[in-house]
Image (cartoon, rainbow, N blue to C red; front, side, top):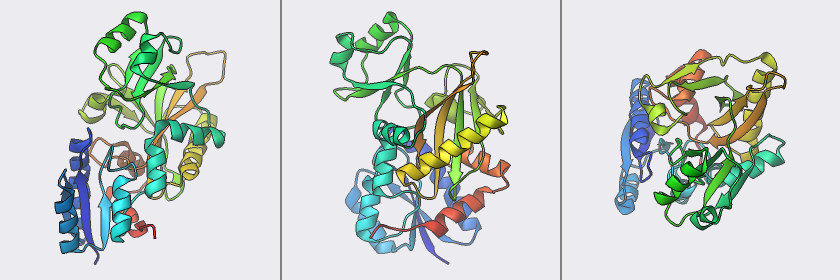
Length: 307
C-alpha cells in the first residue's frame, strides 16, 4: 500500500480550513489502509523538505488552500522532488488562482463572464470604477476572502478609508444579481449542481465554514436547460485551464427578470476544493453516489508529477 503525505496548513488566509481538509483526508486514508501521515506546511520550508526526504512518501495529497498551496508554488517544489501529487499541476493551478487569467480563458472557451477591470486604490480615489453596484475582490485569494459588494458612494468611501489590500491591484467586477451556483467536476464529468443560499448576506468565508449559516440545495432547483448548461460550462472551464483530479466552478444565476432567460455567469474556478464537513464537493459527490472515501481514493490513484 502506498505511503501518503497529506500536506495541509500553509501560509494563506485559508490555513485553518486546509487543516480541516487535511484531517478529513487523513482519516479516510487510514481507514482505507494507507500508510498516511499529516505533514503541516509552515514558513520553515527547509524543515518541510527535510521531512519529505526522510519520510519518502509515494504520493502527496495536496490539502492546501489559497496562496502558495494551490497557485502553482508548492506544485513546482513537488515536481522538483519528483513526488507525485494530487490535483492540478503548476500552470493550471497558477491560472486558476489568478481570477483575471481564469476569466480570460473562460471567455476564450465561450463561457459567459461578468465585466471587470483591474484597479488600484489610486484608481478608486480618482473615481475610476464600474457603475454601482460592483464587487471588489483580490485577484489571487479564495474562499471569498476580502470580497466587498459596493452599492453606493458611501460604501466606496468607507472601503477606501479602510483599504485592506495594501498596494496590490484588485479586481472590480459588475455585481450579478440572483443566486449562487457551484458545479464540481471529477473525472472530467460534472457531478451535479448545488445552490448555496446564505441565510444572511452573501457567501462569505464565515458563511462557508460556520455550520448553520448557509443552505446547500442539491440538486439546485433550476430548469433542466440551465442545469445542462451549467454542467457543460463547468466541464469546459476545467478543461480550458488544464485542471486535473477535481475542480469546482462557481456561477451566478440571475433569474430576477421574469421576462428574460436566466443569465448565467462564470465567476471563478477552484482547482483544490475543500474536503471539510461543510464543503460542497463531497456533499455533491455523495448525492451522485460517490462517497468521501471514493473521492479521496480517486485523487490518490490519479496523482502524478510533471516531468
